[in-house]
Image 1: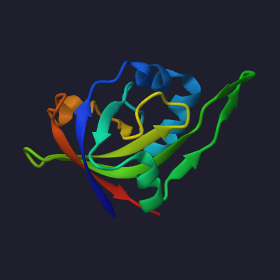
Image 2: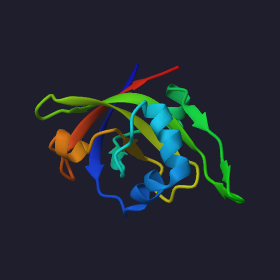
Image 3: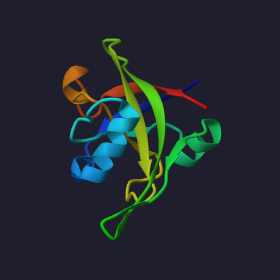
Length: 135
């Protein structure tokens, strides 16, 4: 298990667009074993880049997806537990890092069947702990 602290940050709404797309929604529902919430939670990892994370915790991989004549980017993913360090509440989730993201190298996206900002009472700037389940 790898544990990494991070800070909640706002995204630009692109995660919601992709989670809502039929092809990605099916893939993510299969990974989560539940219907995903239509959006992602962005976390800026403290002192760790995604490349470092990949080296320390081998990710699962979804390769590029071909659907209706178009190619959609794949992504790395890890199962995790997200812990709100303030009130010690937590939720199971999945950490994603799309291949074609425009996010900085230390930002990951979290998906869950729940609206994590609400269920964990999170706001931008809050610190969380991600407990990654590694292969």
